Picture 1 (cartoon, one colour):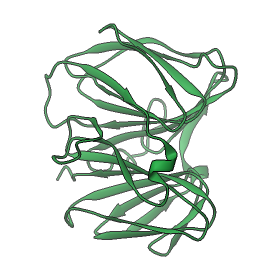
Picture 2 (cartoon, rainbow, N blue to C red; picture 1 turned 135 degrees about the horizontal axis):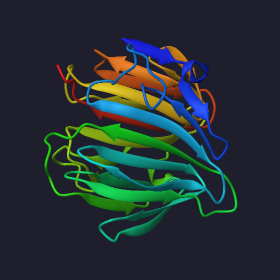
Picture 3 (spheres, one colour; picture 1 turned 180 degrees about the horizontal axis):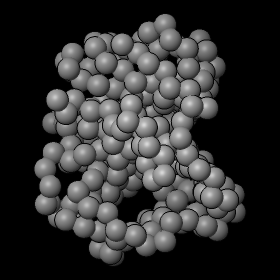
Picture 4 (spheres, rainbow, N blue to C red; picture 1 turned 180 degrees about the vertical axis):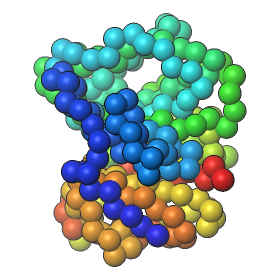
Length: 236
């Protein structure tokens, strides 16, 4: 089963400094049919204007992955971590028992991010943060694991959940495949850029593709495309 969720159908709100689109229920947007997808709880498509951002605020018991699509985001938190994550790179925050952080766009242009929240395997762990560069050339024509809580994904940023976040860049006319570990896994795929066909279903940039009961994804790039996929366990 592959269900396309067109970008124009997403909830969201334009706050001026922040233009946010929500793939799942979030903030003032509520859709009982789009509350989560397995352990994947949030996928926000945020455009943050230059010189603005999210002031310090708390989180707990959530794995939060930020994929920077354009510009850069600067992070500070109550653990003393400070970091600037650039386009194509990834940061993760395990909120655990509680953490306060801020996220600002200190650049001279708008920053665009995907912010992804995944339920942790268990509650009550100590909070943590980390970031890592992932050169786009290294994921040209193939999926690379960006963040993972699955054994064996040693080069990825660690998250505390039975899920992995993978990325690929695919040239027009190229095809990449992704195989799930077993049939019970769920997938959620978003092309950050480009236009693709996933097991015969066409999708445009920033559309969401919810995937269930598919052993293998065959993704054909109809245009040069940048892909982000979450592979997660079902909660049931």
